[in-house]
Image (cartoon, rainbow, N blue to C red; front, side, top):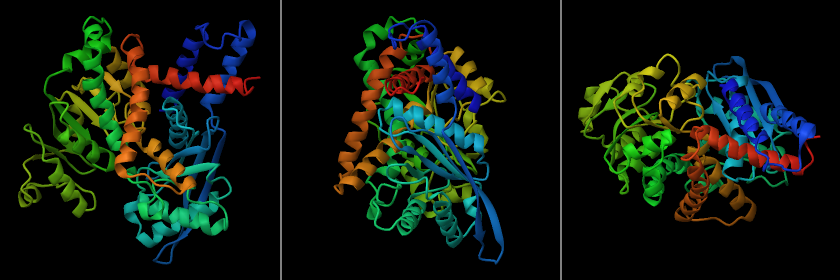
Length: 459
């Protein structure tokens, strides 16, 4: 995954190097040297912070838990990115995700840089008291590099508003008298968080899909019908007809995106398959998404895993292996679980022609190239799942101003900001030969490169 991001950054810079309208003041050897500097700056993090958290468990055992905070780039503003608690977390993964955050913020014109954190645990194996201690220790060990104007963490896989509340409280204890509300985002509303933050990523993921497949095509149908662009043809083949959707992952992102699809009046779509870490559920007539969400709220986030549970809650579906979801005969596949879900081992079995990345980096480099060459339209993470960081920015601003928006105002601001990005990216994408991911990277790298040049950081 690390190589994929570096390769796309490199290809983006190569495309810009040949574009004489980009940084026209740089010519000849100085231009080539500046672009070498850009490759170095954008492909490596500024700081990699590592520690082993010393945790006394309730059974009396003391353990040392590896933890990371990677700060990739702060050209546009303070480092920003989630903290994930997962047993597979590693330094390369966290470093790559920090890099993606830098590009995502640049793409959506959010005044943050890119960072990411990780703790190597399975949070299900720890008690709330132990998780509280892990959160406190994380802040204690990294307190010098965190802060409202330095580095602002948020929830990620395995963390939620609860953990952010704990962490902000510890930050406040360590830094008495300093501003603290903006030190963490994704907090509970009563603790200074923003209304709508929990649903923001899922809503943004579905909004991106809906806007592309309804609003944008409707407003540009004439020229898109005549386009020989490979991806424009894929989009037009699915425009204006019923669409079936499968969603991998039924947490905060997947469940919210599923509910948005279920309630959508713009598209004729139905969610026929969903999965979590245990099971896949399927119904060709469309799943009862509100009933499934209600079930997960009473069962620690898990979907019903057998026929008995389905029958008890009057949910019509058949139970399948969780991994079967990716290869379903559907029009659109939403990936809202973890990295590297579509890879060389299964990429030839993917039948969906529209893929939306709700998770970070769920398609490997080889699979991305293979599917794109076949005309599969992949809406990348950098574009689709930015709702969380955008609303985190609104939360950060509200904490600084101590004035708060209503939920309706938050979603209106979110959709306006995402629409601005989509209206910038889609016209170029549907005329270019580049896949959408490459197009987004070029746009993000253009902004970062211009600012780095203007700040005199390429010498």
